[in-house]
Image 1 (cartoon, rainbow, N blue to C red):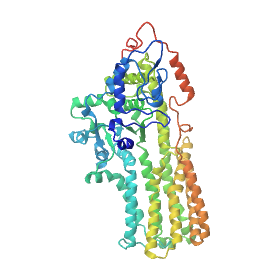
Image 2: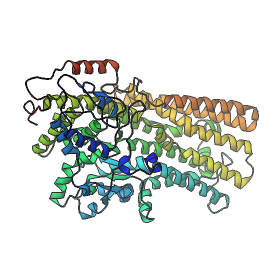
Image 3: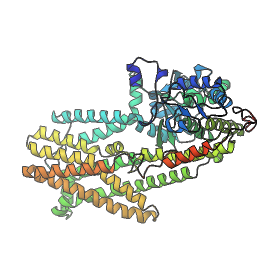
Image 4: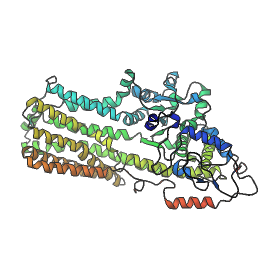
Length: 605
């Protein structure tokens, strides 16, 4: 899109995302124009299976090679199939192409995604557009709060982090200038805690209300979303029917597909149809897979890490420390053993959430492995007939099946594609560790605010040496960028490995191991931090340890590549698969008795 704007090209000339090893994918407008040309294309010779490639292809394309699945490039097909595909993908009424601004969707906790009936107020949120930046595919029965947090994490996380850091910096100066009361802390010299409290509160407020503030300020988002509840008129039955029948044409003009995946997503026929259409039109397109359960893991992780951090600060308050001392607790226990025990509840709660997230991922993989479009449900069987007919046309048009193939062949090919392609997308989106790295940073960002409190204390008392402040800052950064992510990664991997055990036993084992890893890494870095603050010669050891932890983190969270065993191959990613497909295509002979272009006798559809 940036290149198109820089060259001052119209939006229709924009190219979609493709693999760097594939040929360019034509824009939606050029795709429809090309299919229109296919309708009037001359007949293919019976003696040769090679045809001239379309204008946007770099090389000649053979009918026997499923080039669309490899590069997203359309190839010449029989005229009746091309005509039918053109009629489905051509948007006859341009006014049906409407988008809703992302801020209008997310404001008021995504009220437009609620279960209440749609009214004219919903439809007024959308406006006509020339393209769709993101097509939202979701189930209406999924709870609104689950979809809201999923969209908020996806679109507002960066804004929320920036807002929280700005609030933390402002709080730092407010404490340094004496505008905020400072409690008495007895176990360390630092007395500032407000950056941690206000910073975490600002992070949550940014996630929840960033869209509302943007709407109040009159700022529009940079993403035009297609949401069926707002972009398809639900009060006018004629417009509603036209919008539903034009879903394929709208997907053909979409730059990306955002799937809000829930446990019933693959059980509903219309959501499966949206997914099928996009994958067949853009096999290497921008498909974003977002499970609605995932934000719960991130929010619980933020809550537990923040709880342990605030609990540690409360423990250091003067009156709490004195009461524990008068109760007979020794100073050795207070200084060396009480802080790890306070992290134990948060570790076990995080372990329970990781267990549930591992179970959800396993269930998702099982659903994908056993997926069949024949098992999807819909309110009207007439809709099933139309959807299966369209999928059959797409399968023939992109050469997933032979032109003489039946509807059952098309549905079987589609089921196979969904099982493999979605597992590949799902594996890449959740990564090796179950949680992408940027969301783990959100869980441990409270330690950055703790570093700001350290700076505020240094500005107030002028008694903290600069070396001590530097070492504490390095310690906090290591916890956020290395220690915390390593702990989360191993917690999830252990939960996934012990998923067959009893829940209580598995959670206990995983919790103990995670507690040992987390506290061991914290104790190691903190001990080096204290020694480096008093003896600068230990600074090299601290920096070396932090660098080693960052290297381990980068290795654990490295992206999944196409050849990685964690990533499932696409239908023709291997050479043997391509050889089998080409061999089966080349052995197909064109019948001399009838037209080589018209197979209406074999398939009435």
